[in-house]
Every structure is written in C-alpha cells, then in structure tokens.
Amino acid sequence: MLLPLLERAKEKNAYFLVTPKTGARSGVLPQCGTAFAPGAASVPQRAPQPGEQYRFHFDMTKCIGCKCCVVACNEQNGNPADINWRRVGEIEGGWYPNTHRSYLSMGCNHCMEPTCLEGCPVDAYSKDPVTGVVLHSAEACIGCQYCTWNCSYAVPQYNPERGVVGKCDMCHERLDQGRAPACVSACPEAAIGIEIVNIAEWKREYATNANAPGLPSADDSISSTRITLPDNLPPDTRKADFFRVKPEDPHWPLVAMTVLTQLSVGAFVTIWLLQLFGETTRLGVAALVSLVVAGLALSAIYAYRALKMWKRSWLSREVLLFGCFSGVAFLYAALLWFKLPGSLAIGALTSLLGAAGVTASACIYLVPARPAWNSKRTVAGFFLTAMLLGPLLAASLGIGDRRWLSIAIVVATAGHLLNKAGNFFWLTASDSFELQASARLLSTTLASSFLGSNALLCLGGIILPLFVPSWAGACASLLTVLAGEVLSRYVFFVSVVPKNMAASYVAAGKAAA
Image (cartoon, rainbow, N blue to C red; front, side, top):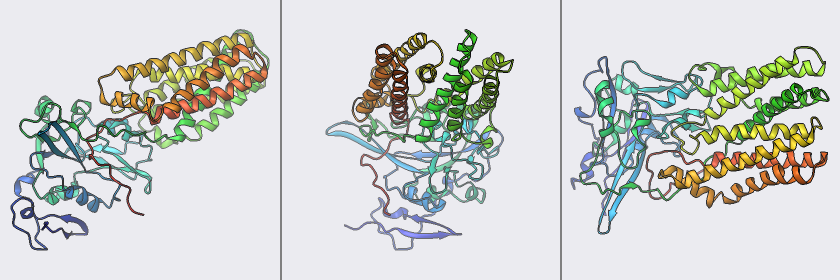
C-alpha cells in the first residue's frame, strides 16, 4: 500500500512537517520534497479593522484526522510530544450500518471573552487590540495553572519542565509577516484557515456557528472559531472518548494549603467566640498554635506577584485576604499572650478576614469549566471544614467547655456529611456528562477514598466526641478528622471532570524517554 510521503520542511528556523496536498485524496503520489502552499483564501490579505479580529475556521467536512497540524504546531513551538497546543479529536454517532465519524481539530479559540485572561492573577494574558489574538507571556506566568481550570476547552497547558503554562497564539508573528500559521500550512486538505470576523455580528451568531458535537458550549467564553459541520450529522453524535474518564491531578500542595488555612481560620474564630463568652484560660497558647498552622499553610501560597490582579482574580484576592489575615492574627495572638487590651476587637477583625479568605478560596473553584466544583456546596464544604476543625483544635488544647465544643463538633460533622451526600446525589441526578462522570468516579475508581473519608469524619466527628469525652478522645478526634478532611479534599480535586473537547477513541500513550 503506497502512502503519501512526509517531507521535513524548514522555514526561517521553524521546522514542521508538511504533507503535500496532492497525496491525500487525488490518487497522485507526490514526489519527495513537494510542498503544499496554502491558497490565498487560507489567510486574510488585510489586517483587521476596528471592531474586527482574526479567527480560525475549521471545516470538519475536509479533516481526515492525519494530525499534521498537531505535529506542525509542536515543531513550530518546540513543545514535547505530550504537550499539544493544537489537538485532533473524534466524534461519532449513528447506528450500524449507518454510522458516522468525523474529526475535530482545535487550537486556541481566541475567545471574545477569554476566561483564561479573566482568571489570571498576574496578568500573563492579553488580547491583542488589533488582531484579537489572545497572547500569553511566559515571563509573567508563575505557573499557578489557574487558567487551565478556567478554560472550557483545556487550551492552556502546563509544561512542568519550563514551570509555566503555554498556549496557541495563532502564530501571530507569522501572521504579521503575511504567512499562514504552522497548522494552516501543514494541513493537506485545507481544513483550517484564518478569517477576519466582525465582533459585534459574531456575538449575535456564534451560537449557531461556533458549537459542535464534542465541544463545550461556546457560551462560556464566546469562542471565535467558526466550524463547518457535515450535513446530516446523526442526532446522537458525541465525543468518541466519552467512556474514558480518569481522576485528575490531586494537587497535594493545594490539598494541604486549603485544609490547614481552614483549620487556622476555624481555630481563630473559635478562640474569639470563647473569649467573647468569658473564657480566658490558655487562649494565648491556642492562638499561637493556630498561628503556626496558618504559617505552615500560607508558606505554599503564591507571593506578592499574585496580588497584581486583585480587582478581578479570586486567586489574587485569596492571597491578599489570607495575607491580611495572617498579619492581624499575629497581632491577636500577641495581645492574648501578653494579656493586653483590645484583643477582643482585633479577634473580631481576625475572624472577619479569615472568613473572607475562605470565601475567596472557595470562589477560585466556582468556574463553569469544572462543573462539579461550580456549586454552592463547594463554598459550604470549605466553611464546614473550618467549623469542624476549629473546635476540634480548641478541644485538643484543653480550652473551653468540652461539652459545648463536642456539640459544635457533632453538628458541624453532621452538616458536612449531609453536604457531601447532597453533592453526590446532585451529581448522579444531573444530565450533564461531566457531572455524571464525576459521580461515576466517586462510585467506582474513587469509591474507597470517598467512603473512607466519610467514615473517618463520622468516627472522629461524631462517635469519639460522644462516647470518649476526654482529652485523649479530643486529640484522637482531631487526628482522625484531619485525616478524613485531607482524604476528602484529595477526592475533591481528583473527582472533578473538566469540560474539554473530544479526544481520540484510543488514548495516546506516553512519550518515549
């Protein structure tokens, strides 16, 4: 069987693979070295005018799934094989013998309202005012990966070797020189092109021309990519990899940081409430212990660079609020330790800043691109963790009335378990693929972790406080619940199924060492 040849081409220090157009469907075998030069229609012959921007056009009726565009993009940008700024997926539908399969190629959609830009805490993203291309600055990026959570298409990709995120920039430097992007140049079927779009008109029309089976809704960020679909697509057409669901990255530093910051906030609120109701014994010791916990948690948080975009980024607000919380908490602990006046007012401010920090921390995860997180139950869960761990720490340090603390612990645990149960039933009852997939993970792959975390919470938050009302029991309760909270937060991170474009039916293997 004769196949078209692939010739490695060189264009001003940019290497990429070029498949000759004549070899794909014409039946004429190309000679080695024959190059495919995209026609004039592939790239606009003028720059965008005010109110316009560049966009990709993808013609699904022409794509043959060869992935020349993927290879060309990687070669152009120097990315390893496992990091693809342009990807090719598969969608399929119908019933035998009337089945259908098409390919879906996608880079960055250079959205009208890019969510990656809105969420970045260091302003590493910008939308070019002339071309509309969404650009990313590797120099400004701190590698927090928050943009990867915000994008419904999973376009920004983290490069662990470089420690920063990267994404398709439409080869804007090539466009400035009147040349087509690498993916456009490499496509043997001219399935990818660059167009100029009127922004106002597209915002009225995108719902019809930017959506396709196997893609998240364009409503999330108003994708600018125009997609030409095949005629008579089967109504049940869906992504070919719908059955393949796997746990996400556990983000262990975030597991530790979120649990410990909520423990510290809960402890300071508990200390302030005990002081408010007349308790004075060992409050300074408890405050110092809570301060140490806060210091351990906040040591993993991003530094001053993440403060830059506090007006729009919840991650920046989290850094700002917890930074203020740690400073005021230090003052509160000092006032309690030395028994100085004014501690009650400072304690109230500490509690307020801590609650605001927990709110900002929860809001980081309220992103449409990760539906299982995008719920009020996420906010409730974070606060219930603080409400549970705070009294447990106080009880283990021997301050306050153990009976009332035990009641608070049991109530908080019951609320926590009910919130988790409600969240699970919400996932299972949903029609959303991503939410159902999260429920599938919790009931199969992650079932032991999910049930184990609930069992630890029940043991440490209800059984031990009620039946072992002693200092030793309080210490055992704290350690048990803390282990349950860490396991629960691990499940929180790994069970989310993000929105994404369709992938291949067969999962890609790991790159060779």
